[in-house]
Length: 433
Image 1 (tube, rainbow, N blue to C red):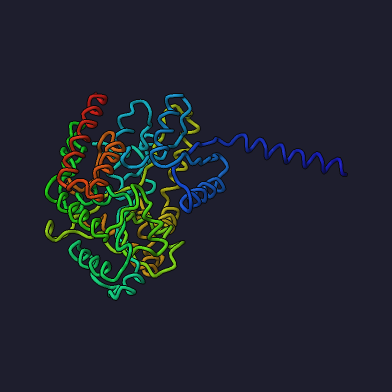
Image 2: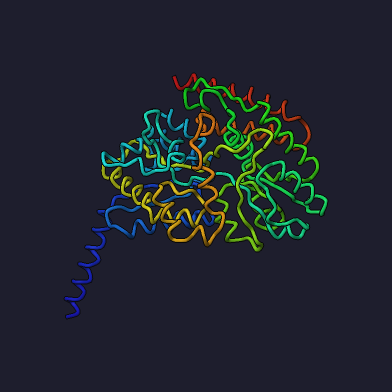
C-alpha cells in the first residue's frame, strides 16, 4: 500500500513539474520600489495565479533612467526582456529604436479595442495614425498636496482657496510669517513647473506641437509665461517660502514627515502619503496663474508605459498579450487606480471606481482624472514627444537650480536651457534620419 502511495505521490510531483515546465515565462523589467513595488508584485502574483499557461517574472532594474538604459543595453546584447517599463520622456527614444520594439496594437491582435482607453492617457503613446505603440501603465499628473494641520497651526483656514498661484503666493507669505520652515516644496521640478505649467496654461513647451509633428522641433519654454512663473518661484526660494529638496521626489519625504505645508507632486503620491502621513492631508488641483490664463487647460501625464520588445517567441507574445489584457481589465485597473493614485487607463475602470464609492469616501482622489479629461487637449497640452528628453531634463534641472540658488535670473536660465537642449534635439534629429 505504501509503495502504491509513493508511486502516486511521485506521479503527482512529476505531473506538477511538467505543468510548470510547460508554462511560458514572461520577463517584465520595471522601476518600482517601496509600496509601488509591492503593488506591482501583487498584480503579477494575481495574474500568475489566474491561469496556468504563463508565468510573469517581474524584476526591478533601478530608477526610470536606469531601467531604460538597462533595456537598451540588454537589446544590444540580445538579452532583452519581453516587457520593459519606460518613463514618458523616453517615448520618442523608444519610437526611434528601429527593430527594438513590437507595437502593442500588433501584439494584441485584430480584436484589440483601442477606443476603451482614455484619450488623454493613451495619446502620449500612439502613432500619428492613432495606433497604440505601448500600454499606459502608471499614468499620473501633478496636483497640489496640502497639509491641513500645518495651515491650521499657522492660523490659516485649511479650506482657503489655493486654485491660483496668486492665492498660493499670499498663503506662502502667511506661512513664512508664522515661522513655518517649509511653506512649499516640490517633486520633479521640470515636469511640474515647466512641462505641465506650459500645458496647463496652453503655451508651447516646444514647436511642432511639442514634437508630435516632427523631430525638427525646437524648445520654446523660455517665453514670458514660463519666465514669470520661474521668476516667482526663484523669489520664493530666496525668501525661504519654497524649499528645494532635489530633482526627483526627494521633497516627498519632507511632506510625508509633516514638515511642509504645500507640495506639488504626482497624483500617485497618494500611495505613500496615505500610508505614511500622520496629519490631515488633502489633494487640490494644480494652481494656475490668472495673469496668464482665465482658466486652466489640462495637465499632461507623467509615469511610464509598457513597451514590448522584439525578438521573442510567438508563445511569449501570446503571454504578453494575456498579461496586458489582464492589466487593462476594469477590476485590476480600478484597484490599481485606488491603491496608487495613478490615473485609470480605461473609462470603465474610472466608472467602476466611482460606482464603488471610492471618490465619495476619499474626496479629491478624482481631481487628477478631472484635471486631465475635462477639456479636449490642444497642440500645447497633449503631451511631449522630444528626443533625448531625459538628458534635456538634466539640463533644465541644472538651470533651475541656478535660479533657486540666486545665481541666475529666470530668463537667463531658461534661455540657456533652451539653447543647450536644442543642441541635443538636433543630434537626435540627425540620428533619426
